[in-house]
Length: 629
Ligand SMILES: *[C@@H]1O[C@H](CO)[C@@H](O)[C@H](O)[C@H]1NC(C)=O
Ligand SMILES: *[C@@H]1O[C@H](CO)[C@@H](O)[C@H](O)[C@H]1NC(C)=O
Image 1: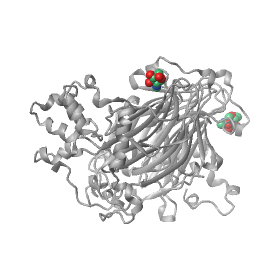
Image 2 (image 1 turned 60 degrees about the horizontal axis):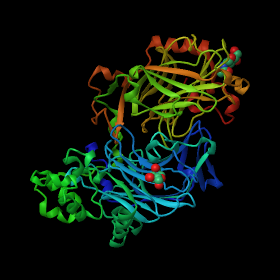
Image 3 (image 1 turned 45 degrees about the horizontal axis):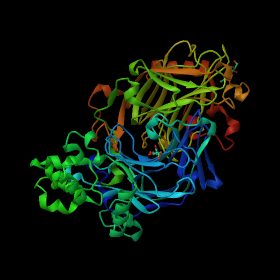
């Protein structure tokens, strides 16, 4: 066994990278905007649209850990004031990494601002802004991110505009352990984007459209904690991996300097007033190409770093920072040795230790801490100091949220109060899901109905991208009158769906019979309220009555006893001994005879549909697990 913390170390050397041929259908998922994001031209073109009701967005299917990623964008033309087109890489969690391009719109003829930022472990505050040397709305231009272990380089049409070097040796965190996805969105930010919020979006011009094409990634794709770039320490085998150690040659350094001198609008490193603590700007400023220039600026008393020249140890950091040539001269003995390489671990062993646990995480319920609102442009709300969350649906859009954490096994409770009255056509989905094309998923879906007619509680289990295991139930109470607890127990032996403690469905691990079981991919919690009146109520016969909108579902008392996965490391520990404490009883929990009786009662009295009884649907024979229940 290797320490899990060393998992990502082998990536410092690569064998095989993945070059994706560009097709938006294959590489991206539209995640937001209720039809406002469109993939066109057989996958060659993607457009995002923004109107008064909502913006739109997409994200990559893959997660990358290092890469050279190109995208061509054509920005919102004409009067784009108030709109922002964000295109960025980001990891997840509260200590996330992020590499940002943001395009701030402007009045016709006035220049866009290209805003950039780098977050490491949840800390950003490293903004640099630029004008462009062309009209970014007249045609497509290429915006590139080079991200390798030594540096991040932002380029536009091949011209570098910003370099953020790895200066971990002097205490500056650098994004290198967390895989990132590509995200993009077009949204309204007229409270700040254009001339600081003075110029508002002109909705008479909506919809606003930004277009994307020619995505290309030479990159290490991470899947189940395993990198496509391999595990050995030998240097890259082929020249196609040159990006992994790419640096700026003197020609490109000259170009960078030209951009900085002529097009840079804002640089946090020059913003002395913003960083009254001398140490911080010194340790976060980009080295850039003109390190010596920074020093001389400092010598004139205009640079914060100069103030620290009085002999503190931070002096070293400043000098190292601004001029890497200086590094060997001023390095104190113990600064650079901090970045030690750890022993090698096989990437394939990452998830194995999770079959046994030591410590699980019990989250105290607070929606502010545990969830992100991901969808609905204000229609999802966290209320009562984080104790309550409401989702709303109106004709323009639904809304949704997702957990910050990713879980690999757990016992997860949530209380829901569903849309009351005539909820026909609406669906409230509450589920766990992993990512990727072979995803796992555990679903509760609540199908609304006319007033007085019963909701259907629809359940499903996906393993490795395959579902088709629907079971549906009526409930033995009115789920709109009050909150009720909906629970998912997910351990290596079984998945149990429960309502107010009564099990309604058990999905056993029958891998021994060839039935895939979700156990290798971490899942997030997702929920959304949306319009599905094409199928939800009486098979689509009853439509949503928009006169009754907005429709509202409410959530409270979230509780998770679960293994939280972060950077491929589980909070449940790494040993193979059995759980140390009884609080981990859920990890081997099964249904005792009382609960088996309850399950039988539900199945006999409230089950509406069971795929295992649907002989017509499976002409080749029922799925193997059906013979076991
Ligand atoms: C918009 O144009 C004004 C006037 O040229 C300029 O000051 C500003 O930086 C431009 N960009 C944004 C996003 O405000
Ligand atoms: C809605 O009510 C009808 C009539 O009771 C019933 O057949 C149906 O299953 C209920 N639920 C849904 C989601 O259609």
